[in-house]
Image: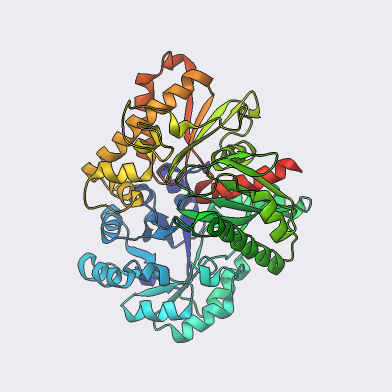
Length: 524
């Protein structure tokens, strides 16, 4: 296999959910087109895509499995079971994240086990020289520059670096395959001149929407930039967002647990300072700052009207005033689920849709909706409290002080509870369900049954065109969508005539950051 790939082009055929070309059949067609054009190998994500590609072409396939890890970010082939499934589907080699973050999840031990038990070459995706040396020392057959610029330590790197490839070739201790930010034939040739064994190119060949975006950016007017802060019960996410919804940079930090108002404000101010530093390095000046927060908000004043026990001491906080004083920027504040609904209408699934409901599923359960083309906040800013629709009389206690609320039955803790012992996070349950674990699959189905009770109530009240699921429980969880639609069809009257579309948000983990910025954009 390796003789066939030496000094040749490997094409990465991948598409995320929501992409127009998402799905095994499209990936197989891209692979065939790539091989017809001279590609000697393919890199592909998931057993389903690999099986389809193997039927379409006769070249080596490097297999990966992307999973959303417990920190909310993608991890590449995080388990041995993932690697086994890739090989059984026809992968001739397996790649996995061997960065410092990947190693903390057992990557180096997994390298050894894959080689010993599956008998295929193992490729280590790295971002730094030290990571490459460690992976080669653990037995990795190749090191790949895939994650250069995509880790916390290297996020300042935004362009292809042939000098880094040359350094890897000299010092890594294993053959080097160049991958990441290679956007032109000239850069691919540079990689080979630097000593790379082979070159992998993905976005520049197989993602038409990104290629189109490069051309569009080259001719569009200069965008404005906005800081977005998303304060959640578990993590505080932040980033810089363009006026057309593009993320320039992003990051997250744990939300201080139980620290009260001052700790939460300090976390927001620290996140804002990180964004201002990033903006300065990029040579841009943010026009405004947007904040999406758990709790109900007076959008006119930027003050928290009420927050549940998830954020103790947050009720009454003047977020806008505090951050305006700290940053000197105009500040817009909105409830997090409302902000996500704004993002969906501006940049996501609900473009052109005047009547829709956005449901966020994570530490809590939130809702945001548009009716008649306008964001619905209610007379006292308490509208869209979907998580506090009571579905079980005298049921489980909720953070709002009542019992039997939907939130207690459809949040992350509930999913872990339904799965029984052996799981410590909702992400683990979802990953297990996707891998065929019967108990985890039943847990997702149980959560969908409870979620349908709350969603059917709001559908009966508002009759929306679309229901959009977002948040951690919706990420990488296609079974939830199917189960919810099945339950909704039983609970909702005149279901067949409604034409209600149920979709997963395409905005992914940083949708709340984009939503916070979108609120600020709309106020301009």
